Length: 149
Image 1 (cartoon, rainbow, N blue to C red):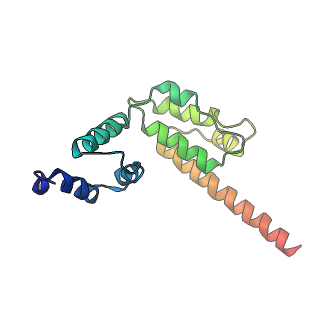
Image 2: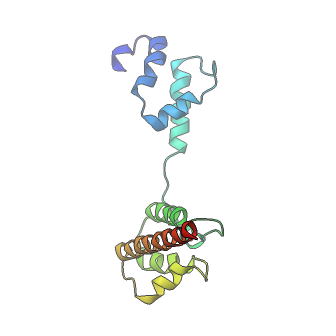
């Protein structure tokens, strides 16, 4: 971009070639003729991406999370880990308990997690993966029975 800094119109044309996919999606979403100068382009860019910075989430956001009735275990655990990873501080012990408690009371994973104590996040993730594999195996077995009968 520094090579073209004297020609503002050319900078507007060259600007997209320096963008990564997330920024490119933002750039592509701009309405035609909504930007009249490179200065406006840089202002729009800065105002959008300064406000899109990730902010550490408070513990309360994790406490308010629960698995939805129609949500798959994979979708829920992905959402849970994303939120957990956005938190600052060491809340591992509470996060371990919260994951289990945020599952519906009749969910098989909740029972599965009650069997053995989980003492760290790695163990929790391993147990979730083991449960998913068990669930998939059981579903495959049921599917085979349906095909045979």
